Length: 384
Image 1 (cartoon, helix red, strand yellow):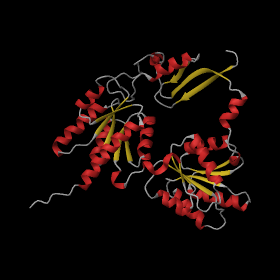
Image 2 (image 1 turned 135 degrees about the vertical axis):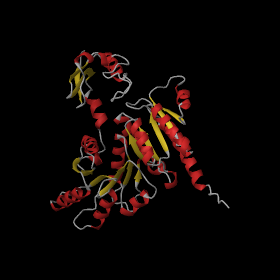
Image 3 (image 1 turned 135 degrees about the horizontal axis):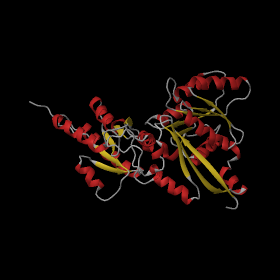
Image 4 (image 1 turned 90 degrees about the horizontal axis):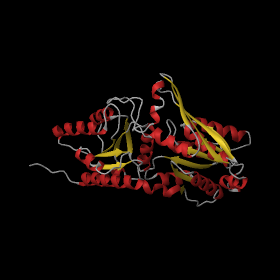
């Protein structure tokens, strides 16, 4: 392929490994290395088959190298045409106001740190990192003493020991730290945060996950507004419009065996102001409901050990004694005719197909938040 280059990707894990006789089988539709009814590791058996076909359509190949008990390495190759110099420049071009700006990224999550660092360096900012509020304050002081102060502080709001607001307070009170532009990143906004940002002089309040173009625009606007007395904190994507009143927030249990899906669902829910607990299978979900009160359960149907149907049946059986009813919404990768009816017959109250569409999730959340508000506002009956 003229002008094209072959890219080789490797995805490694430290899991249970795959037996030699199973390695080719796992690329076939609906095939898994572990096919027992109560298998420990879940999945539909479609992912590798679909991936293999996509790679083949791109002129590449996919294979696996594995050792039982030590994990696996999945390899795939694809051919890509090299981008022209003009195209590469247009995708990475950043406003001149960003180039050379010294920024400190503060986040206790190293993955988030690396992602933000990569974005900012792409736009020619000079990036430093810190994993805690104390480390951030130390770096700010050291840079100030060296005569090379940070011009921008980009910090996560929710961190242990010292959160983003506490960092902003310390900067405001401290001597010897320059009044750097401060921007907050948060996965869960709450009413009153915008006012708090304005009180502390925070220039931006951004909801995660944030798109690259949104971050670039927000940083450029904050730098451009520097020195303006009446600047209003920037809220990317409308910021606080998704925040719920305290009475509307739900405690939600997400039962899902796939860790990526769990994280995605958690972020979507926290972004909307709800608190989240997670379970990796049906047994964990039933145990969590025995220990804690929830306003809603998002229940994956395909899980190891105990699937969503079995877990729902166990929950409904216990409710016959208590008289209560916990709303359970099915999460499923299947969207075939009759699936919704099957879930409802199993005792579910709703149905969400994966990948989750935000507008459908919002409808369900609004429904049960409204029921919560109605329940909270109903006066208790006084028995004579």
